[in-house]
Image 1 (cartoon, helix red, strand yellow):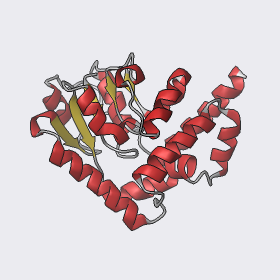
Image 2 (tube, one colour):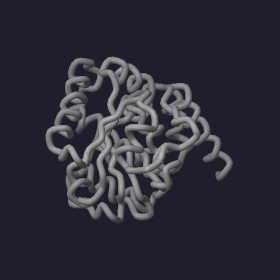
Image 3 (cartoon, helix red, strand yellow):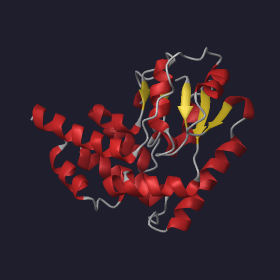
Length: 221
């Protein structure tokens, strides 16, 4: 493991995943890959229950990780991979909350969006993934109070502050959407690519990926 992304969901993590892979630091694990490894769901369930986990087994085959669920265990990952560099993605708190509230919360938290309910019936393993995601993120990280905007934002800000307090400055990069290639490449000691930095963070694309995953499951079925 070379890179540990500790920024929470909807802070540009999917764009960072793509950027790291362009730079040759992939494959990069993202929350959307959990369902690609059904044999590892038990490990994530164990982590969400507070049990010891072999993190090298969880991330076998990957050189980097970003987003939840890994970001929820950033302290454990930093200990398990002491030579890895750490990247914290951040964004303006109110905009972050609104983005989560339109995407991953109705999908994996409240499950209130009809598209989430439909996906649960179609995509294999999504019910197990959603159950531990709720236990780990929505009931754990956010104390079952994500719907309370002020509380959720306070939790988000404290997470970011804790990372900055606890991770040695020379090991940590803090970036936000719009920063582009330069700070990332300077931190990693790599040349800036010719192509534009990826931008994959809008809510429309999120729900498009959900629809694509359902279509894929229907074809496989």
